[in-house]
Length: 336
Length: 267
Ligand code: HEM
Image (cartoon, rainbow over all chains, first blue to last red; front, side, top):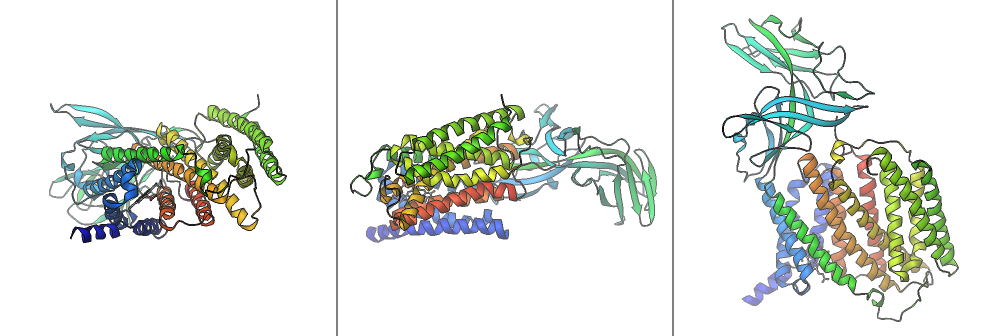
């Protein structure tokens, strides 16, 4: 019985299987790059086989068991694969847009959520403040400083500056500003029955889409769509000089209700769909990427252990200056 | 003192002279010491050129093709010089690897030199760490490539490079360099992942550069294991080493400048 088990393990530990899986992993990565296949998911197949292959080898393979550095490397590699799997299964990566002056709304998050994700995004609370973005000539985006307000335990709100590489960390979720941000006209609609609806319409990312600052908006309670866009006579950016993202002073909100055209400035009201639409003011919205990767510190530890163990193995190997006796044949040359 | 742009042509001319000198010396069965001296002076001039540009622009040579190519010409030549100093018995392999590196020197001559601005996400200590580890990885690989080219040349002209040890010995040494290269490649990927986590909030996203770096890593792992499985001949190993270098090199130079620059920020 033990013998068959050992024989089975030895077969599972085959280095040919390792090579086949390495090749398969490379093919999947290639297919992801060339053919757009979902590499991140498919790669699990060769990784799971490699994991079994490696576990069997660690249990049975002489060369692996007797060389401490090599053993440590492969063991750490197996741990890394396991941790990466747990990380992906419990992780979340997504994005969200938050309007200036409003609170983060978890229902607006679009995300890839692992099946084992503990799901506590609902507990994240912050309010979007103003942001600044510096641009170098030729529209090169530099630093983003987005102010958000976060409550403490006593209910006081504190400003936190978030950037592309300085996250807001709330309950292990990390929010980073992204290139995605733009203008958001704030509208109030007083329906015929007197109910008031207010909200902001997010226009496409600016300045990336400076030439199409438009969107459609559904009149509340009617299902009727109107087109709206922001007419900015003077773009707020300058091509060849440094500038800072700002709200334009002279922008006009254009609304097309069928053939009827309205031009609104902040504070203007127009009759629309039986009610009245008021253009309150022009605000901004900021796009955030959200990341939740609980295994990162452990993965880093496993990866560092793997690299150090392999270095240990290699140093031992290199200290043997026997490479030029690899044939066992006569020495050929003298030093030149 | 010359401006940074003036030091570079001097360095490139000297690299070329070093390559020529190494080939002539080995052809005539002489020592390659002149080539090594020329190489050392070339590297000194190139170091000055890179350092002056670094000080002037305020960032290291890792933004555009010119900077990345220039710094790799520097680091690859430095790697083969260090290997020649550390392993006197393989010095003659300079005549195999230096001519190959001149392809990069000529390429560099054709790339326009412009002042660059580093993206904000480049402002982290992990970038120089990542880049340095990558350069050591490529440097170790290129030494292995030099030895492999000797093995491949000897296949057609068995008497070539008669001052160098036998092919099996060269193959063994090349393999050890690839093993070291693999360690640095692994560390490079770790540093890159830390940087990506810092800069973009994700440690791995299968962007083209990451995908190809991963494929290269798998290829090296495959090379290391196939030796244990098939005990292949030095010639086959040499072909694999050259293949690995080609793959690594295309990853470094093909992907970032062809694809939509994943390591740079959108507007
Ligand atoms: C992607 C995953 C892997 C990587 C990067 C990797 C890397 C390495 C490296 C660098 C060596 C040292 C080579 C040397 O010093 O000669 C090695 C040796 C070895 N690996 Fe792996 N390995 C991986 C997966 C595996 C798996 C899945 C197995 C399972 C069978 C395995 C079994 C071995 C064995 C048995 C050796 C010793 C070979 C000998 O006899 O010389 N490796 N591996």
